[in-house]
Image (cartoon, rainbow, N blue to C red):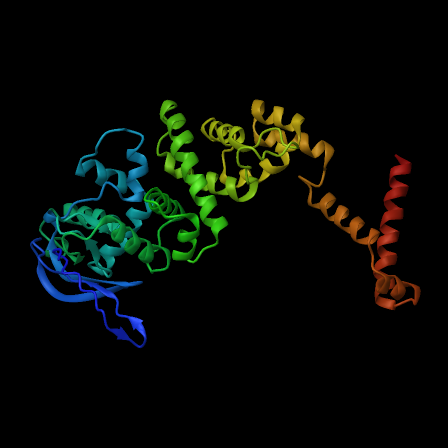
Length: 374
């Protein structure tokens, strides 16, 4: 029996096996105990001890999604001060600190390993540390932190599952980038896309796109960003998420012949375009779909950027940059395929529909006369 005192009941409860209980035993972290709680986790129940822990006994987790990606660019371990500074660079953390200051403490307890490592709540820890510094370590509100302490010995895969449940469906949801980082870590531990989709109640295509986007950032974009001294590459997550959502690059061996770039070549090019600021805004990624099908526009894009490229596309398709021409094209298509009941309404001189059609015909005739006059 491990230090967790794993208890597996052989008896049945309402026809189902009783969940495994991981008890909160042998905790050595210094704390002021409040109570014990049980967190349900599928076929496992994790018992935690709710307590107050001295701020000085807590430490940041270098595997936290908000910092792990940035640390991967340096290639060396970070100190606790460096981890705090990385978290503090995030505007959301600064806003959280202000909120905690207004409430006078944490509403939601952090989750801590027995050695004091904060597994969930690193942003809250950074906020409380900043509040404690600002109070010159004189305010008792910022000297202790409410925490749920896990028993020693609980393995990392169960910790990851617990964090995923809390941050995918719980009230403290991770940002899309943090969710992707977690999914990638789970996949590296052997979970398939199908298993991840079932665990987090998402489609398999959603999981696949997240994993591909994170892998591309990690393997291609980060090295390029590091070489060009591009700060905080994780801030470009929305570019890569949009890329897999709208451009949907083919997998190797199934590239589309109609595209200038596709498959791995497109993924590598995209990383270069983001680094070189060819796409200053994430929403501009949606326009790439059209450019990829237009060799002339692609040449303009690689030389002069997205706006000039869209001008080149508009020379062949004015609906791209004009609401008017897009609406006119839509109207023309609808008239071309007008259904029989609507034609019959005009033949039978339906007053309201005939009026609208005559106004349209009159407007077209007026424009024709203006064109002829020119």
